[in-house]
Image (cartoon, rainbow, N blue to C red; front, side, top):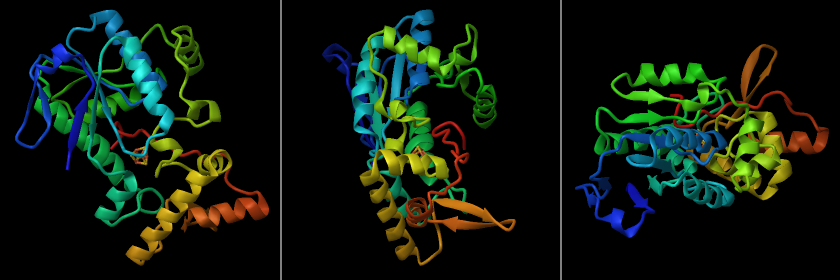
Length: 286
Ligand code: SF4
């Protein structure tokens, strides 16, 4: 079941109603919708939107995968307070493993599927937008100046909507510069960045991540790695198929690589593909 919560001042609560399907639907004009993921660039994006347009008609929309790092919730509240716009949170209610169980597939690896991103992010965000936004609403995504191609893909995928990515525009900023900006604003960066993770999604896990990313997860949060290893094994047993989150290439062929096999290889031989970080692009790339 889809659930939706919104943190907002009491006077704004009057501006919402409940739809037939149990979702809160805003009854005020949404001029600028910021897809607020809990990442550094989405915070910087929201800052630029508010600097240019003010806070009136701005919504910070967060789709919760129910598997986020605990520090993401601290960050996203501080970040929304800093931007000056209350956070709007939506959630399917399932986490990525529960979605993959229901869809009977392990994403990533040999399948290349991303049912979690599709259902917990893209479909949920698209539905909220259809129910709450107007044709003139501008949707802002957290992309930096190296990611303009992803903005082009969003525009191609949903040409009926107006898209913008303020951090792809001048003055151009690198991620370290955005991090310094965040600190100047008095906000502690999400702890996953300090651990070395390239994004702040799904608590350091991602079905699109590569071996180097999972080695980092194993080193920094072995209990969390063990949880995902167990979930992967449960899925393999349930499906009776040689699915795995990862894959590897040998002799020109691709093979599934389980999290268990990767962990054992790292522990016994210390070997893994140090350059395979994979991608994420959750909510943006289909
Ligand atoms: S961050 Fe990765 S694991 Fe999490 S929902 Fe997105 S694609 Fe799935």
